[in-house]
Length: 447
Image (cartoon, rainbow, N blue to C red; front, side, top):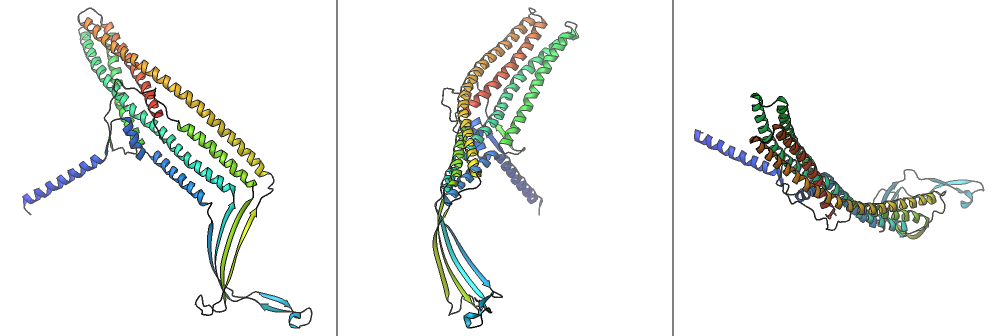
């Protein structure tokens, strides 16, 4: 193999390797442009939501299974018996003319017995089964509400981390601006201190401002990475997967609080829990009612003294068949059913109280959510204006300082005020974002 051929072979290997690595990298990268994108992705990948969907499917199968209990129960039986020793029966001797008080032994039956039968039974009147069907149907509905409740919790966790990334990105942007400004001030004060123009206290204040700005920058960068890792957990991604958020905090971000809120999944859960409790109470009370069943059985039996299964030309099969009605009624069981029924009724009252309380709480919580959102949005606007005014004020004082019209202490304290107002702005922004995604969640149809 010549040198050129070897070089061509290695070149192809490198190209193929590069293409494979690119494919792997592309597969391992997910990008989102809004929190709604993340929610949609979580619907298919979050492990808790996937398990909740399985539970909903199992509940639906349980509903179908409860209907199956109303159908006839059909069974088939086949048996083979080898009587190694037939049972002996003693008959009175008078039957064959023997003296009174004597007995003679006889054996009835044949050695080999083959039996086949089919039986069917169905409850004609079993009210408990009908109430069990109702309970299973409610449980199937309840599983959908449980899925919606789980989805609400997962969406809330996702929004917390998603907006945490955006919040810390904003904090990083402001911290970078502050760090550049603080470093410039510190360098200027240090130079003047070296010439004896300012005292050491001024240098310390400038350095404190510089360290505080850098501290905020470090915190923001690490919290961005932590929030992204938490998002990966919620989206069932691995640590090595790339997660990209192509979004930022827009000045006009808002929610339409005038829009109607959807029904809280917690209310639906409480309502269906009350219905299940009532259905179980009624089903249990049906134990006081008789059960009527109809049964049918048909059987064929073959007896032989030789082991010739099913192929003897003179085989004689004996048929037997019957049908019956069975009425069963447990009239008394020591009073346990009566007391259990009373306990079940108390359980129904408990569920009813929980449902009514959940409805009242939901209405109040929704009103508080609207109020908190309006408050946080108004405070955020004020905090943003104060922060920007503080930064402008620092700029004016810096210019006056350069012109000799303001003292160094005024400049340093103005910058300290700006850092404090910046932190207040970030706190207000954080509170507003929490209220924002809470409003969005209440306007989603989670079922």
